[in-house]
Length: 297
Image 1: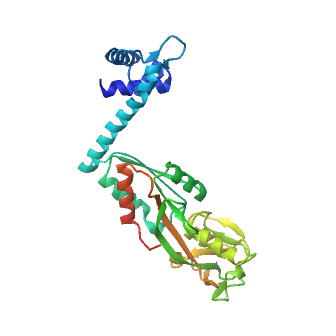
Image 2 (image 1 turned 45 degrees about the vertical axis):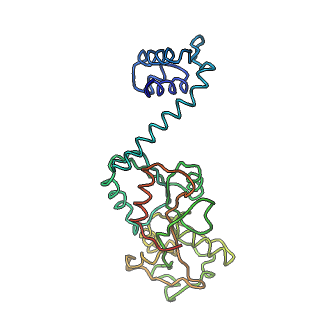
Image 3 (image 1 turned 180 degrees about the horizontal axis):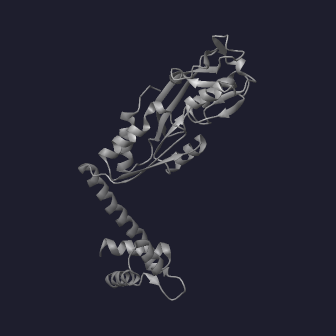
C-alpha cells in the first residue's frame, strides 16, 4: 500500500469520478484507475461502485476513506515537522488587514521573512474589521492588522503596534486656524476627513465622539494619512491625523491639538492563540512580532 494510492482514493471519492480526479492530480486517468484497482486487490474488496454514471464509494470504501485521509495528513505533518527543524519551511500564510500605516514598514517585514523562508507563500488580504475577525476566528486568516477599540473575542490576542495621539488639521485660511486646540465636542457637525473604518485612527475617532454623544460627520476618507492632509489643504474639511503625520503636513495646514479628551489611535497585530497553526504560520507570526513594534496592551 502506497501513499500515492491513498491520495488517488481520496481524490476519486471527492471528485466522484476517475477523469476529474486525474485532472485534479495532473496525471493520466488510466494510471489512477490502475492504482485504485491495485489497492482494491491488496485489500481484497472493491472500494468503488462503478456501475452508475458517477463513481460512488462502496460500504467498504466509505469505511476506509477516513483512514486514508488520516494517513495523508500524518505524512504531511511529518514533512512539515522535518522542514521546520531544518529551516526549509514551506506552506501558505494569509494575513488580513485594514490599511496599514507606512510607519509600520510592512514591506520590510515581508521582505525579510521571504529572505529567511523563500518557499513560504504569503497572501495579503485587505478587508473590513468585522470580516477580518470572522475570518480569523474561522481560520481563513492566520493573523491580521486591526484597529483596537474594544475587547478582543475569546481566544484572540493582540500586540499593539501603533499608539499615537490624534491631532486636527485645517487650511491656514480656515475660520478655526486662529485656535491652538479643539475639543472633541467641537467636532460635532464639522466636515471631517479620516482614515477608513477599521483603522486604529478611525476606531478611536468613532469611540471618542460616541462618548461625547454624537457620530462624527466624515465627508472624505483616504487610506494614507498624508492624503488626508492634502484634502484638508484643498479646503475639503478638517483632517484628523496621527501625530506622526504632522511633520510631513503641507505648509498650507494649521495643526490643532485635539483635547477634552486627548485621543490616541491604536492598531494591533491580532491572532488566535487557541487554534493550531501550520509551521509556516507559526514562523511568520514570530517574525512579525519581532519586526513590528510592541507598545503594550
